[in-house]
Every structure is written in structure tokens, then in C-alpha cells.
Amino acid sequence: MQEKIRILLVDDDEDDFIITRDIIEDIPGRHYLLEWAGSFSEALAQIEQKRHDVYLVDYRLGAHDGLELIKEAVGKGAAAPFILMTGQSDRETDEKAMRAGALDYLVKGTISPNELERSIRYSIEHAKSLAVIQRLNSELEQRVKERTQELGAAIRKLEQTNRSLFEAEKEVRKALNKEKELHELKSRFVTIASHEFRTPLSTVLSSASLIGKYKTTEDDEKRQKHVERIKSAVSNLTSILNDFLSISRIEEGKIYNVPSEFDLVAFAAEVADELQGYLKPGQRIHYTHHREKALIYLDKQLLKNILFNLLSNASKYSGEGKDIHFTTHTSDDCITITVQDEGIGIPDADKTYLFSPFFRAQNVTNIQGTGLGLNIVKRYVDIMEGTLSYQSELDKGTTFTITFPQNHPTL
Ligand code: ATP
Ligand code: MG
Image: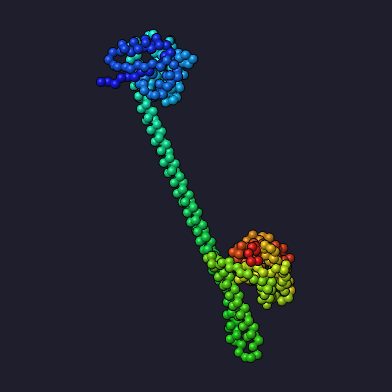
């Protein structure tokens, strides 16, 4: 047996209920179960139970109207179709009914059993199709949402891959540049070395062959002179080789800052003393220390190298008889060291590249040197976390200043 179609009639007039019931009873074939709600609120309560297959709603409902009821019920999720019943037939009511969510509208007093049956059947079918469409729609929305999420994840992954690729490329580029720099440095080494080695080597050769010729004791003085020249040429070669070695060890990252505690004044005086022997005639290093405290915490070996370079530059680029002022100064949180000379100075145009390897200023072409000393000094100061600066005036003199922070707990 076919299941009954359950209808809820919403109408505040009981007469209308009876009329409708009669019409429904006249519908041939099908079986209908008609229930009645006489007020707006009762209707809402019934609709909420979702027990009916279709709702017939009167336009007039006391203080409310049928459109309000349909809107509210649809808003609350009513799924069964609404058919509005009105007193008059016009397009405006029809449109209003459709906008409110009614699937059909019928004009009271003209309703025939056939018409009612057809309207109910169409509305129920229509509502079913709508439900299917809604379900498909929400499934589609869900799939779009899932796909969007998947796409988002894929994009994020791609972005990440992109970023790592970018980072990797940066690393490779950096390594390549470093390699290039090293290559350039090496080829400059070869050029400079062959040039710088030639002079002392030819000195050694000529002095050695002359020594071979001085056979008598009267030649002793001359022989001695050439022995000295050979010694000086060899020590010059050794110092160039040492500089090369230092640079290559810095390049390989093999120079470490190994600080220890020591007395700055005793140390600096010793360095100054050691260098006095290498100065030009009449030159002197004047060492002064400011402040009582002399205990410091630095890498002694690196500092010694720095001071040797700066002090020997000061001597090399100053004339005979010129003074060199070497001062150290300690405060609670830093050490400042200055080396000041009264020498030839550095031309402004050369200041930009002063710390680059092999760079030599244009006013020193007739003074021997490889241009490595200051590069080593700068790198050592960096390794020791200090700062290096200088001031220079052509033909007046140059002052180099180094500062190291002091924050060792025992000091
Ligand atoms: P070396 O490697 O033997 O020390 P160098 O003295 O030429 O050679 P650096 O010590 O690096 O090389 O100095 C680089 C350049 O800076 C020098 O060639 C010189 O032009 C300039 N310079 C350095 N110190 C002074 C100074 N005290 N007075 C004037 N010029 C200086
Ligand atoms: Mg030098």
C-alpha cells in the first residue's frame, strides 16, 4: 500500500480547514492525511517537528501573515515544500510567495481537487530535486574546500622547496665567489712572489759570488759586508714567506683567538725594545701607558704580530731621525692602542683600498714591501673582535688606532 502524504494546513479559520479537507477527500486515488494548525506559533511548533510532506499556508494569519511564517520556517531549516493560499490572484503575491520560499500558490475558493493534487505532487517533487541539488551543491563546496586546502598545502610545499633552492643557490654562489677570490689571491701571490723574491735572491747570488772572489785577509771587511747583505736578504725573504703563510692560514680559517691574561705594559715595552734594533738611524719608539691598570685579556701572539706590523710600517714610512709614538690606554671596558709616526703619510686616493691584500700606496713605489702587512693586521683585529682605524696626512704623519673590548670576568 502506498504511504499517505501528510499535509499540514496552517489557517486561523476553521471553516477553511473543513473546506480544504473536503477538497482533499475528493482527490481520487491517493491517500492524504490532513492536519491543522490554527495559529502562527502552533504552526511553527508543528513545522519544527518535520513530520509533514507539504504545508498549505494561508496568507492571512491573525497578526502575522503566511509569508512571514514561510520565511521563518525556511530560516529554521524546514525542508518540506510550502504552498501559499491567498484570497486573490496577482503577480505581486506570486512573486512575494516565491521570494519567501513557497513553491506554489493557490487562490482560495477556486481550488479544485485536481489542481490541489497537482500542486502538492509538483511541490513535493520540486522540493526533492531542490534537496538533491542542495546536497550536490554542498558536496561540491566541500570538495572545492578540500581541493583548495590541498592546493594551499601544495603551494606552501612548493614555496618551501623554492626557498630551500634559493638558499642552496645562495650558498653555492657564496662558495663560488670565495673560490674565485681565493683563485685571484693565489694568482696575485704568484705574480708578487716572483717579483718580490727576485731582488733579495739576486742580492744573495751577487754577494755570494763576490765572497768567492775575496780570498785574502784584507778582503775580510768586504766579505763581512756581503755576509750581512745575504743575511738581510734572507730575513726579508723569510718575512715575506711568513706573511704569505699567515694569509693562507687566515683564509683557511686556521687562525684562532686564544686570549690569556698578561701585563700590557711589560709586553708592549718588550715589543718596542725588540724593534729598536730594526729602526732607521735616529728613529726612536717612545712608549707610554695611560692608567694604572695593565692586566689585560687578549691573544698575545696575534697582538704581537699586529704591533710588529704597525711599528715597522711607522719606521719604514718615516725618515731617519723621526720619532714614533706608541701608546696604550686601558679603561674599565676597553683597551686602546695607537701607533703614531711623523712620516710620509697616505694619499687620500689610496685610503679606500689600504687594507686589501697587496695594495700599496702610490707614494711608496721606491720602498720595499708586499702590501700584505695591513691586510693581516685588519684580519687579526677582526678575529680578536677589535676595531681598527687610522688618520693620515700627507708628509705629516699617520696614526693607527686599535680598540679591543675588555669584559673578562677576572679583570
Ligand atoms: P709589507 O707586507 O711588507 O708590510 P707594505 O708595508 O707595503 O708591505 P702594508 O703594511 O700592508 O704593506 O701597508 C700597505 C700600504 O699602506 C703601504 O704600502 C703604504 O703605502 C701604506 N702604509 C701603511 N702604513 C703606513 C704608514 N705608517 N705611513 C704611510 N703609509 C703607510
Ligand atoms: Mg708593512
